[in-house]
Length: 220
Image 1 (spheres, rainbow, N blue to C red):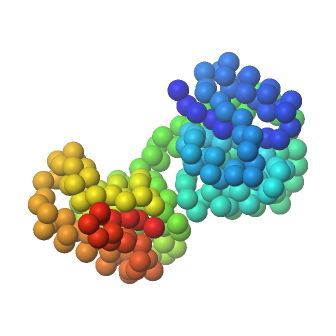
Image 2 (tube, rainbow, N blue to C red):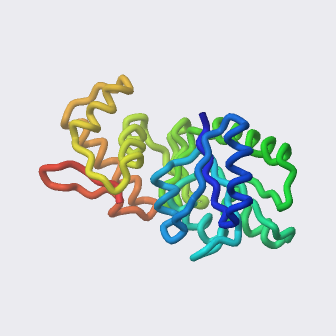
């Protein structure tokens, strides 16, 4: 079941949205902690966000811009502003779609379904800061620069990315490589980490992977 987060401070509208989504087979959540909105999103890890532009503490476009630095969770902007400038800004900041209030519930559900379908087709794409990580192609892309990773390097990087800001032990990395049918020894892991660091350095992330002595590695 897809999880959808509703970020809308109008209680009547947010409750109507929740009822619509719950009755349509989705698992919906209403954000109530606007002071820590980004942290709440990253903790819940929804499959899609319905985001209003006018929200407390910040605005939806700023929240979207900050979210895109850490995640590619699909976002549909829901707003009462029928304004082409807002629409263009939302799309430029990384919104996947845009719908104005008052909206037709059936149209909203169709758009949600379309965005989720596109998202599933792009499930091999991850985001690290301003890098696009293409798991299927083994590519790191930053603006017009592309770096090709080997299969082992990508397995290591994607595992570190999925545990970003947490220490990952060498044993965990070795296990993940084994789970992906890549059988390498301890020395080979060291070599792969070194090569991965060198490639990240090429695109401006020299200090991305930090060694924690006696513990493992951490992707910052």
